[in-house]
Image 1 (cartoon, rainbow, N blue to C red):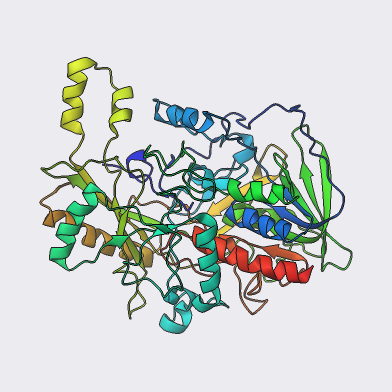
Image 2 (cartoon, rainbow, N blue to C red):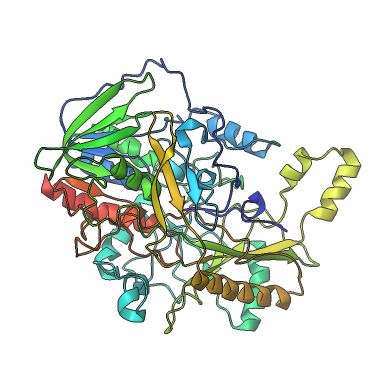
Length: 566
């Protein structure tokens, strides 16, 4: 039976299911490049804005501000993986080979972490430290949150309300879809209202989508297309999808969006991007109400300072609170911007639920490397029940390429084995909402240190009873659909063996009350006038939608506010 770490059910950081429970081990130092690579990583003069992190949030903010004429410096902890001719194809081939492992250099002392709580959290399974962040290997599914996601406390008395609502983000959602080049259709009867069509047409339903649709129609379950940040036709300098099917962990054609696009645009507008420059701490002024500098290390061990008028922290739901906690001072003994005591608190994720098996007809599994159909029918409701997003998987069961490369057979014998094992698998997945809980947190583990001697992040996380019941509910719906297809059910991912979708939310939540939140509605920290946080860490709740489009929308909205503050 597959577990949530099997490649056969890999999902989306915009996230996904993948990796192994052994990611806590130290391994070797897998950082890219030589110490003396000839790149100048010295600090520039005082900038208008210093952005820490170059994933989708940091890259979009840097791009918008640089194109507005601001002097921008971006500090990225990981390397720059230049898309040289053939580079992405070589990474795909490495992934497909037996024992290919991680193709983006995660692991080793740089990426140590600790996992506590009732469930192990395999942090390194789905993050990338590099220019572009985890969009280098994300699945690329981009949905808007629903209206209910912003108003859980008001509507249902659970979770928390955002200080902004869906209407506040509507124009920024539209802008984010244009920036990403989202392919989609207006066929989702459960979607929140929108102001314009998607920039690109949706990908057509797959062969297995049609199989699922037959059963769902008989059961009264609506199916619809999935918005994807990949090109069905050329867009914004990126080619059309070539159908390699290895979207996670690498898109060889470049049709899938990565934040590298906005990094390049920022640099073209004059921004300076310094890679392999992990920020060690943020230093504030004597009054304790402004950040003066970001102190970063270079591969040769030298420390540098970037001074700026405004600072933007965009390191994700784990590294953002870690940096703030590492930046403690006499004025902030519990960590920078942490007068509320909530930095690192209310960590949450989406949980995976899945059911798979075989049917007596061809399913053409793995011909498409991403989801093309889903259902939001079980997302909204009158009762305070956790949201569920159903997914119809195109990549269920073994891949013939991986099966062949790992086989000791050859010729006709291998062909016969592939015919028996491949082509009839079918599976469903689901993302299940997890409500934020104070007891779930990202902290520091002083007993373990990274390659610079800093305490590693500690992820304290579990699967609570409410979420477990929602997973069981999702499994029940999935079983009913597969039974309608007369499928033999081979495996179930339920509450006992579920795992995270690696959609980190919370840890620096936004809110109106400084005692109950870390940043305000504009993503500025309550404690420091020139320190802003963008990314999923500011989400008070996460719904059950892949978070990257909301990350982008919030970042674009914050970029306007930062520009106005300069």
